[in-house]
Length: 111
Length: 114
Image (cartoon, rainbow over all chains, first blue to last red; front, side, top):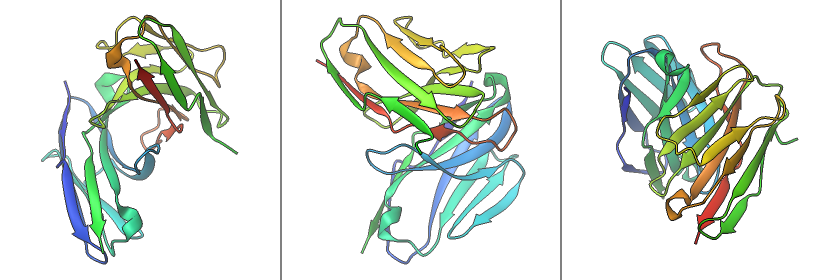
């Protein structure tokens, strides 16, 4: 089976840096994805990791450690528009290459 | 141009009714999905379909059935709607099975069963 865990809620201040953690247990790991979902909207793709290490894309970076079953999403220079839910999703080889989503972390950015 | 579209955006109906939600993607993708997002915002896969293989999440009641008239469409039929079916349903598509290929989500259909 699969199990993915994330903190439910986080709060940070505009301009700050925030790290959102994700831990997972899956039998056929084949990649980890981060999505952003604003209230009332669809999830949109942010980043992808399949090998250990850090992937940087502008203000957003994502890290993966496969041996620890751990990933984090790092958001720098926070802006008010970054207030959203952040979903960690694992692609599972033994689940038909389908995605299993974590519960999501709701981030509130305060002025 | 909308990549993945769903209709209707909102659906309010009575318990026991049968309803359908339509999904179309113009990306030329091979695989399409249906997800359910409940009030706690948990996004769970219901079906994945790539015109060769249908994978069903075993927790999905058989009142739910996907219908794919062609590669660009995957509609969701729901029979005998129940109160617990109230949720947001997202359609998504993906180009292939390569590692880094992400999914593209439709705007969602907000279903309320009364």
